[in-house]
Image (cartoon, rainbow, N blue to C red; front, top):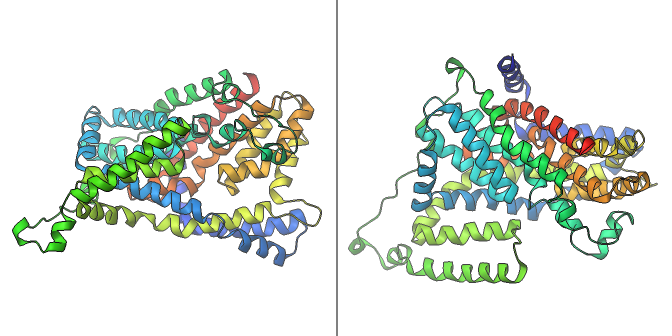
Length: 449
C-alpha cells in the first residue's frame, strides 16, 4: 500500500511537474494575480514590486552557485574521492545505500545546511557508482531530505538571528523581542531536539521503504558519473607557462594564505560556520588538495556546468518575494494576508501549529530563511506574545515551517540536482512522502512538547 502511494506520487510528479524554470514562471504569474485581488493593488504596482525585487538575491545566488562549484570541486580531489569511495563501500545493498545517504545528509545538514547539501549529493553520487540496483532518483531525494532539519540545527538562521543582540531585533519583531533569546531556548530546547532527533533517525527508514521493486528501479548510466581523465605532459615537453600551471608551489602558497584566515576567523568568532566561510573552506581546501592550478581549474570547469539552474531561476524567486512582501497604501502585503489568516483562527494551544503551517505556506513563495523572517516576524511574534506563547517557540514554529515545504519547492534542491545531474521532477515525488511524514512529527511536536 505504501509503495503504491509512493509510486502514484512519483508518477503524478513525473507527468505534471514542469521544468523548475517554468515552475518559477507559473508561480510568478500566480502571485501576480493573487496580489492584485488579495491586496487591491494595481497591475503596475505588482510589476513594480516584481522588478524591484528581481535582483535582490544576487549575493545569495552567487553564494549558492559557489556552494555547488566549490563543493563539487573539492569532492573531485583525489584524496576526497578516495574517502567518499571508502565510505560508500560500507553500503552493500540498495536499501543500505538509502539509509546511509539519508542519515549522513541529515546529520551534515543539522551541522550546516550548505555543507550538508553538497556532501549529501556527492556521497549519493559515489554510492551510485558502487551499489548495483539502487534507484538513483530516490538516492538523490534521500540526500536532499536531510535538508529538512537545517533550521532546527546549529546553522538555523532564525534561531541564530534572535540569539544575536541587535537594535533591529525589536524593529523586525514589532517590539515582541527586545533582548536576545539564547539558543538554549530554541536550537537546544527539548522540543527542538526531540523533533530533530525523530526526523534524523526515522526518516531514513521512510526513505528506505520507498525503494521500488527491482523491475521499477531507475538506475544511472555510470558513464554519466565518470569524469574526464586529465592528460599531463612530461615536464620537459612543457612551455614555461605550462610548468607554472602544473607546479604545486602557487597552490600551496595561496592555500596556506586561505587557511590562515580560516583559523583566524574561528579563533575570533567561535563556531561561526556561515555560508561564506563554508565556501571559503571548500575553495582553499580544494586548491591545496588538487595539487596544481591546472588540475584545480579543470575540476572547477566541470563543476561549473551544473550552475545554470541557479543563475537563471534565483532572480525569478527574488521577484516573487518582491511581490509577496510588496505593500499597498495601507501597509498590507500578500504574505501578511496569509499570516493574518492563520493568526485569526489561533488559540494559545493551536498558535504554534498554525504558525508552522502558515510559515510552510509562505515559504512556498518566499523560499529564503531571511525573507521568511522579515515577512512573518512582524506579524506572528506580537500575536504570539499577546496569546501568551513564548517567543522562542513562535520563532521555532516559523523556522520549522520554513524548512518543511522545501521538500516540494525546487528552489533549494537546485545545487543538489546540479551535482546529481537530475531534474526536479525526478525526486519530488519521493519528497512528497517525506513532506507528509515529517509534517506530522513537527506538528505534533509543536502542539504537545
